[in-house]
Length: 388
Ligand code: SF4
Image (tube, helix red, strand yellow):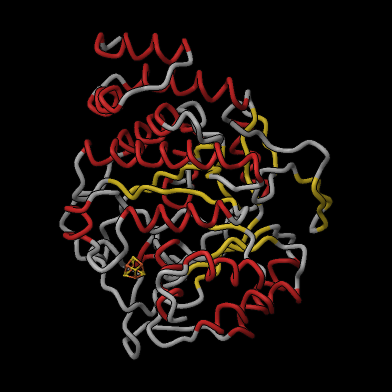
């Protein structure tokens, strides 16, 4: 065992909160097995042998974006080859197909479209709500919410904008757009995007309205290990605050989703991107640092299903869903006949992967209630999910 991890292990077994310094020691250690063992200890305490998944559909309504973040291979400018924007009708049709296939959740995000009006977004939500009322709509990253506040000409009224979106059918916020909470990295890699304070403001306001949300970190590009730990600490503080307020019906962060950077087709293509070991370590350290987050997700689209199986022993309790179309990261790039956007795994395949790894697969809805399913028909079970 790496001796530097000894005092950290004592804290973990005593249920004590880790410091930023502890986090840094974990990220610097090459003793992946001890790190995994510690993360697994916390994971088992919270979730035992349960591993969650959901049946969902990702809808990326448009890739047209006013910004040009260096790490992003998704965005296009209007008129550029490959640029698209879906009509509300097309999105509702996709939502209907997803519902027919048994999805419990739609995950809807897109670029910061410079010309679509605010009504496009509220119309999209209310039309989906009307067509498929049972499906949960998790939509719009904090960056998009700030963009929507700007285009609806009330840049400082995040609460008002979120409230309109909620009124139209928004069920929760995804965790994207956080990238890495550091101003140097921000200015170099995604200048123009909101900074950490604004990202946290959006989630704070959403929580006040009773909306649940998730959080991400995009790592493995130009950030330092210190930046990663700083990111965790800011999220942990924000969650402490949310938990304190949640007694009066507020929401909170449910899940941390560490996202490895994919250099291909981005302006940072010369970088190697994180290794498998780095990915495992980040998932485990997320579990150890974010002691007030209930869930750690390995987003299999980016981590691969094989690594996600392994990650269940490294602090992860959620493998996300049966995602059908996902435009943001093209796993197989140009070699894939679908262009890499058709990424689907069936429920049986997901369950098999979880069982093979030694865990009990449990289907959840967006807010971690157990789902009872008979083919495409489903209902929320009596037992609800785990909180911290
Ligand atoms: S990361 Fe988001 S905001 Fe940045 S260019 Fe890509 S789509 Fe636009």
